Length: 114
Image 1 (tube, rainbow, N blue to C red):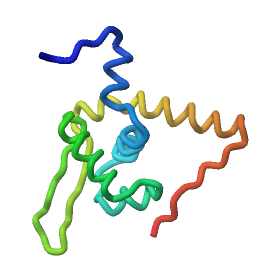
Image 2: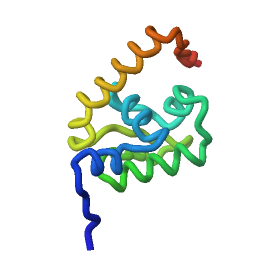
Image 3: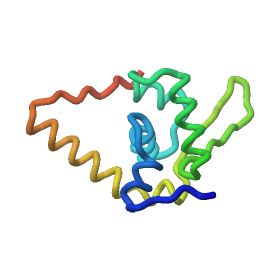
């Protein structure tokens, strides 16, 4: 039996909610990223958590994983069409977060591109 929702926001939060899922989606909105790139962009997430969230997003049809089957491993992640449909929502969250940081004096640290 499919899950029942009583508000469209409830469905949206169920799909993209949580601490890391929207952050992963926001990074993938910029384009294709390898696993290691995502790890560097999100220093606060553990490898286990990143792997779990990527698998969930893949199962939800928002992210596609492409394994080039090379040695060393070369795995890339990108948004599906459904994931790309979230771009305006992700941009709105980004813009609001940046404005909030400016209003409150909160520092946003960009990870170094190592």
